[in-house]
Length: 572
Image 1: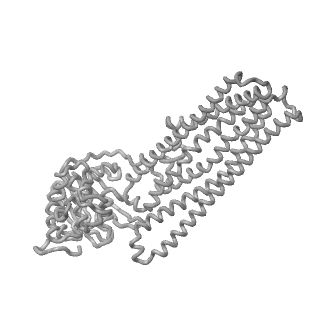
Image 2 (image 1 turned 180 degrees about the vertical axis):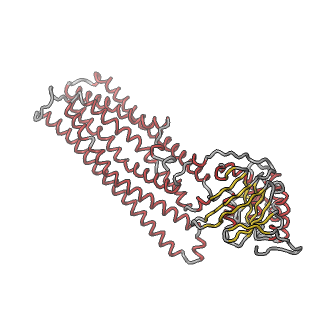
């Protein structure tokens, strides 16, 4: 997923991000004149015996520098948070767009809990890298050099000591960081697995309870939680160990400077051309902890980088290697006009199940604009799979031409305009009946919604409800029967103008009278449109121009059934 997400892409600086990294650097550089003024004030009062009135200007400058550094620090924190939120929002938007551009079969093959954890938890895990590690890295790269250069005219030996000891911290930080990165990757994987496990089991809680699997699933959830606890504690141990090691080396560096200054004052060490003044010694002592502070800060936040790398790896694992741009394929097909049928040609089409088992083998037929066909066959023979491949929801081999353009070369957004599909289990969202019908066209007014509901026979049952089309439904259509959900999905279709209509068992749950009414309206809507219907019902197949039977992966032509006057359904 390198084209979609890398730490380098995430940290690509915006104007806000550049300011967030520049302000701490400016604050650190202002520390040099601040320390020099403080050492000058102490030199003047302790050694030179100057009065406070003579030191008024340096005191004012010192106060101004301290206020400026506080303001810069506050501004840097605010800008860093704003920049991180922008980056996380941009990443989440990219992931959601990628998710929506994927075929449903891709989504169905992955844990919904793991995908949601990647978009929520793993993206949030990047916060420390963006708000703390990145500014600390800039400071660690420049401030020690600037401080060493500032100390060099005062005392060359202290500057040399800084140059020798300061690089030791990044070296040991890198050594510890290798272990931290591996531990964070294990922790991110365990967290994603637990999130996915919990979300999937929560969705199937009723089924698990009915089959007596609740106790076993609770035990497995406890084991997954324990694995996450162990991996998290491993990360914590490495973080604390690295901090202790780096603090030790920083303390040694400060102690070395203090020892050298003290011995110089006692006359036991003389590496200077002139005596050590109080101002020079204090300045070196004040700078000693500050030269290591950016490196210590970077070390303290180095685990944020490891956490971010593990989060990026987990997101890449869940979302694969395709970027958003990979799905934006230019299309040569023009969207058919209203009531215009599409031309469809299949040649040696092969479709596999998710387990790579062949379902359809070398299917070939052609549909003229406005032609209607039925596909029948025993349950589980692959009729729905073939319909999904024609809708662009499954990969296929061979040739599938829609209006003389290969289907897999058409952009998904344009396929949505050309193809209207109603599956066996249409998705109904929590909302009113009207809200669910309106998904077919969000610009539809109340009159169009009413007309679509009438044509799909939704008004038959909605008219008996106190709120009519404004009746609220639960998630997945709770409150509706299977046939009622199917009719709501058909009403959505009537708000659109597709050139190709694909229907999977559109009347499977309907009584005879309702079935005939639904078919009458459907045939009127599809009069000039191309339509493929998967069905077991002879009443549906009898209204088509041609019929095909799918048996053992082979698509064979068959006569259109002749329906007797009292005929209903037969096992096609």
